[in-house]
Image 1 (cartoon, rainbow, N blue to C red):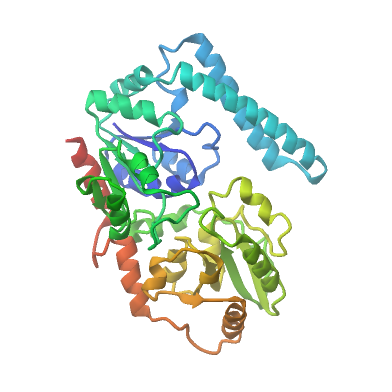
Image 2: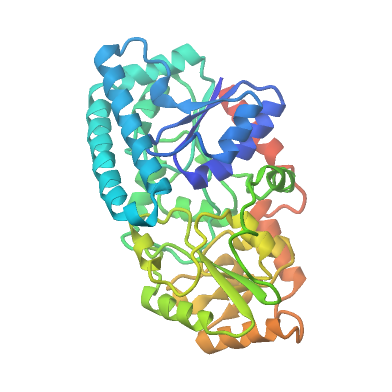
Length: 423
């Protein structure tokens, strides 16, 4: 059995195509969520895998025969607490929003405390070894997760003892060309994050070089391209995507624009971004919506008073289909726009990093608010072409999706690599 461990929206997005490919080729695969707060029941990608016969569950529900009654009670309570919290947050009406929000936080706090206690008491190396032995695990596939998160450390220790290979697969596309891209980011933290895995898969040489400079051994790092943006999966993804946008956004006769933001920790000038929201809301003949990054957590409050419609509940892929123009700062969703031949405006002035697509000249580089207004009005009036070439776009897509190779069966390469690692 090849075991895949997921924890959030992004890693599921990048891991699902690999599981799909291996399942179609009749390899025994299972997907286990290690984050008890994540709602696996309402994830359309996980449900798609279930329909194919893939086992999908919380890892805490499996292989618990030796943990006893106390564990089962505590597990029920913490999983139920997180489920109740999610339900209150998603179903509360305006009149009950404040009460539900407070109640949701309290219930979630109870779940978090119980999970931490249960983790220390039960989810140890012996438990993890039992999982590997009972499942007949051939390989463990994680995303680029820190070993100290959830129960990853226990699984890595058990795998090392039983000589089961561990792989770290990408949970996003690395796009940055400067060294320290996040507040508090260090080479040491990168080394600690990756060093305990046997194999580290990255999409492009850019990411491999960054990890190697952090001290990770180059022979552990392999460039395989992007499973998420491979042609084979992009075609399949469009078939399973839930579509909800038409009933929520009015844009008849206007230039449709989606602003895909980036998390503030990535050296974002938040105040200037909020001013940009206001400027965009005042433009005539242009409908702009904002989609916060899918990993946005506590910082989501910065969007509370935005003059632009917040469409966080709508899929980024569906928004990419809907939009005439995409605005980005440092997000891999630009691949969607460029792959579809749609104008991509990179708001360079809103952050302190530099990007790969900027250096390839594969986007429209915007240096200030005036340039942004002029560009959108230019596109609204249909006055001409974007100031970057298709050749540059294609060169960048080949680098970022296919690992620098012009022709590559990305999903087959992932499958072969995982299977071979188990041998």
